[in-house]
Image (tube, rainbow, N blue to C red):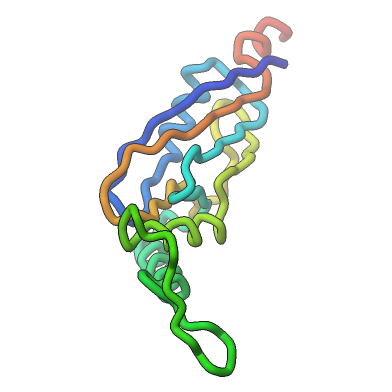
Length: 158
């Protein structure tokens, strides 16, 4: 068993989903790993990681619309009987900043995934996404930790 730590950077188009599946698989292969566990962690507090549908783009559109409906910009309506409007106190970085922090808290910032033969094990219609919660395009860093068997170890022990 061997392990490596690294970091991958992804440029996104702002609010929405960036499929990072191929880049993660390529990283595993270039690192010469055959099988093991891949741990990926977002190093940011306003984006998250998710596994979801990769066939119908309407799934991602609906996810984004749903999340925006439960975490609105500027303020939210309390669930108490008086339905008070509550304004965010953290707004210095823009109206999308505090909602982005809430969306991140409701999602994942870390995924642990198994891989075999240099490929992450996913279902037929699944992909790994970096889910950007801020409006503007951002460069995001993802910490990557691989624990597993190198390809050369598999073939040398045969």
